[in-house]
Length: 437
Image 1 (cartoon, rainbow, N blue to C red):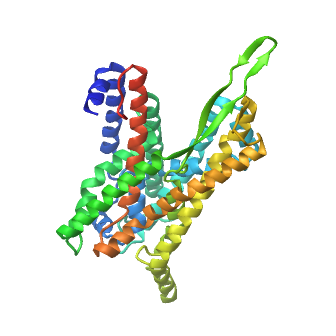
Image 2: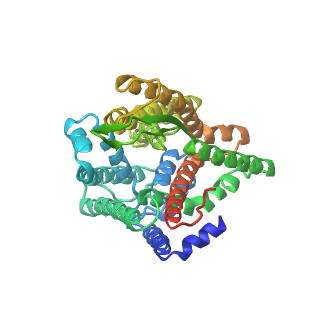
């Protein structure tokens, strides 16, 4: 492992890519410390120190820790991720997008990516406005004198524009990492933000709040964390390999394509962390909406808002059960969408490939779907356990500060594995021994 790192550093091209990626991350962390005007920092820190604010803490994770400082890049790249998910779901539904994806080639993919950028702008503006209103609705308000329909509308509008521009700046920086650095740039941005938060998360979990963790509680949390990391690695790398044979094609007296064999790698977890994002977005929406009315003047409205927040609060057992079920369902749904977009049975038939004992065409598609459904069950249940793991750890340790660390671990480990694979490929191309033995 150490020798592989030394080999990567000795190669000028790889060294430049690594330094470029680190440089972008340093710029990102510097931008995350520039707080927007009109923010009461003391109230903001107190708000995020409260473990009951699961909605804000979740958004803070996906923003890379920038929301806790409400910086000019407070939204992170989350609006772009949302836009990407929406476009992926629209491709099989909209015929024009489907045609562009199938027959457009590289130009079609660039056009879809361009549409994703266009969609990111209004999503970022809406999310920025919603988060500003949410902070302004706190008691006491964190963001003072905010409102697009009041006397301070120009200042408020500039605030929303700045947050939207910050998101697009991060998207551009992430694409620079993808093109000239190492790894997927958008994932690296989120990765850098989460890693920068690890010391504060550890302090919050182990010693913050009203309860201080004992030695056995710390030992239990460390053991659960290590087991979770091992499980994430196994599930992320796990796959079912379906053997494929290719027929020999002869044109006249000449063999155009020789017969051979390969395999189709069906992943245990096709969907990554997307089901968690889907599920938590739906689960926190009622509580977020109710948060706007907890300080209403009408007692009846206040009572309803308080009841909704209790029912959809992360401490409720029913909330965790619904969360688990939604993660499992969204895992199957998103896996089906991604698998259909890959068009594996059609490509096999077009190239003369077949699975031994299975007829090409629809029988092959049905067979692959059955196999995928079985192995996806393992990935879906694992993601469901990852989703509710903080709640289960809270029940065992009785610590109120165990927060969304399992989702953060899923992101960090997944990005680390993807980046290591890219470095591995770069080293093997240059005839060096890689990281993975």
